[in-house]
Length: 113
Length: 117
Image: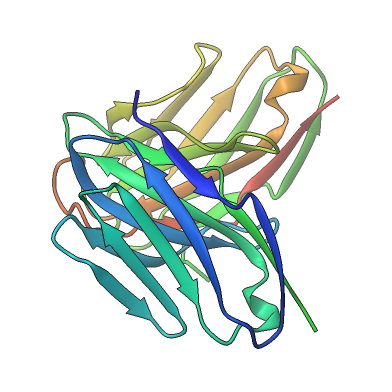
């Protein structure tokens, strides 16, 4: 069964610190992996999208990495800001017929002053 | 602002009732996706429409149905509502159908919060 597991489930860090969120998946064959940021009560917003041939992709202070061999991805947030407080969702697309996006349950990040 | 609009923002109804959620995609987007997000479940894909036709189905209950109209707006109909149907329902849109534009980003609306009492 295609699965996406994220860790940690929740994380609290001080403003200005860095953090790394993890995503492990079993989806195969793999097409692409996306990271979304979801503020409480709002729709998710795309941060990065990577295909199997990409190892890293940045979007400002957000850097995603992908190891397609070990089926692992990480999202690194640099110099965190209070506005980074949100849920971060890893989504892996299956390369198959039909629609097959597999969603992680997300990591809830709280950045405190 | 993603450009995707959803109405209503909040909906409170009773068990056994039927409701309709509405979504207008971004201008030019042909695909509409519906998602359910419960507190402990994360985002669950329900159904996708592309240019008026059903393109893919996910974990959508038989009590739920959707359609996409010629002007590309979409409606999600939920009937015989149960307490467990209480959730945030999101609509997303993009330009591509399944199998094309693998890296195409989906743009999410603000969601409709459904509370079934």
